[in-house]
Length: 232
Image (cartoon, rainbow, N blue to C red):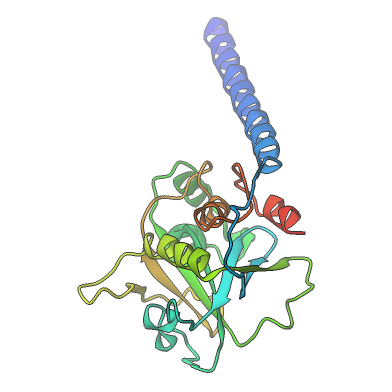
């Protein structure tokens, strides 16, 4: 009996030590790679299209004009899919993440071990979250917002990156997720590809979007703060 108890305690101790070591290594590499910069690709055309990075402190969205010569996002992310259905809004914030996190935990108090493990292990499904903004004036200068300009070709790469994560219906339109778990009157969720994990988070997605469009980015980051620091 004592021997079995000793073995159990030993196994528990080793398991706990391994978990702690993993967490420490994860934070070390996240911090290190988050400070390593992938520099912006040089271009010769004018950068005259304004976009934003907008964070809520944990999650980062890219905010772009609704309608440009490149794309009209309202054709994919229809105004009618939001509660307000207000077509006067000029900007749209686009983010990607775990569907369970998005829809089942409106606040961190609602987080459960099941949802956290499902997302962290990469076995859940994902969603694109699109939120309309009338303008971005109120956010410029905010500590959680960064403004920068890109070229039209860079924006095309950004658009193609987002479209590559959407799941489309037979009419080649983004599939709206019919849910009451919306954050307000101006947002909606859409079916998306790939699974969230601790190695590929919502912020990793945004960081890779910046890489895909030739912008400054972190080598790798699961967090939003390194991106805010990079564009400070």
